[in-house]
Image 1 (spheres, helix red, strand yellow):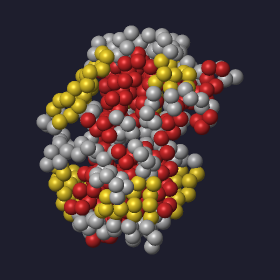
Image 2: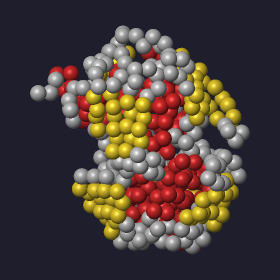
Image 3: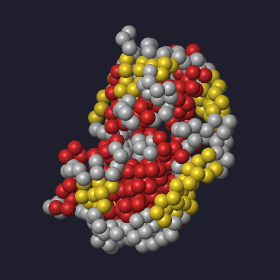
Image 4: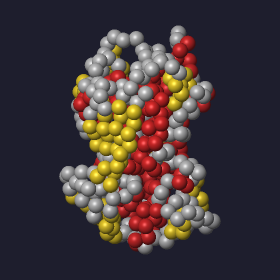
Length: 462
């Protein structure tokens, strides 16, 4: 029988009440939970786009099919002539051989607030057979895309900005396979601009050669894109084992492929954070280890510095709480999506935690630096935001989180339509009672089963 306290967490996501009342800290005692998060959003969207452009029928297993971002990407690809069959978390994608079919009438792709899909498709539709308009919701229209537009224009692409310059909506005109070339790239607001260009490179006659003139933004995501392309048969050259200096993807159109998508490492950070917060709890995540393509797979090493016990193999990671966590200094330039998880854990640690490398958080689903400052203050944490220079002299931002008395009074966390704010806020319910989450359904963006998995963390079902 399901305990009454779990009923809200285990309800279908679309029926979960707002605000969602979370159970308090679970009973102590050693236990081990083996939880596999949904497929990686980052890898799913990359693999989907590459399969759509490839020649033949590709199969993606373990894909993040029920998330809003993936659904937006699938719907947009269907508008561009891509046939996709979905069965549970398996996708069979019939690619277009490097030429999207936009049709004679102008095609408009509405991508809501799916930032990854918006950036990737803005570049990819240069391979269409007609002009395509890229648009999104009000928040997406506030998220900058001007640097990507500028890079595409350097490649000879004609792009019309239909609203405020530097933001969607934009109308992109095709360039066909004749494009490509070398681009000198400085530090950008998002690594997705470069990833978007690299993914179309195999179908461009001159490929794409990215030469960094300044430190690369979130280089782990660029390496992920290049690593996936190489795994699928692209011609890839990377310079800079430490500081990323140059990435070249040569002309070599991809054929159909089969790929097993890794679990989402960003989603796993909440599970690992829970393992660190609860004394005696071991969280094991199959499918994620030292062989992962995702930068966030390194997050457990930060928890280990804080006092958790961590064990890793090539394809598995385990995090165990030891009963004591201490503040650390961390640079999250390579894993900015893990900042809110670390912030929640830091609010429960002994002593301050300094987190650097956060400037990209200003242009995510919400301004995550400001949102984190507001929400963690509700449980007594002091948050100081500061500007700093990165390791290579680039302008950056960071925060110092000083824990306070977590308290027991009812606290309602606002989520700003941001899935990561909801999931990180939930972690605090593992250390204090009376936590409520507004708009709990926003987790569907990447982790639709999060609340059911959270019920397991709370010991409410197995």
